[in-house]
Image (cartoon, rainbow, N blue to C red):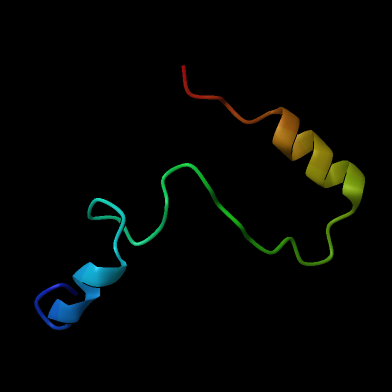
Length: 46
């Protein structure tokens, strides 16, 4: 992608397309309980 779009470097965070410390996504029709359980079961970096 960098070869095809060299201007993209202006929008990168240390070579990444997004910040490594933040993620936003869609959950579709999942209930709040399902989402809460999913989040609680995620492994956290040490």
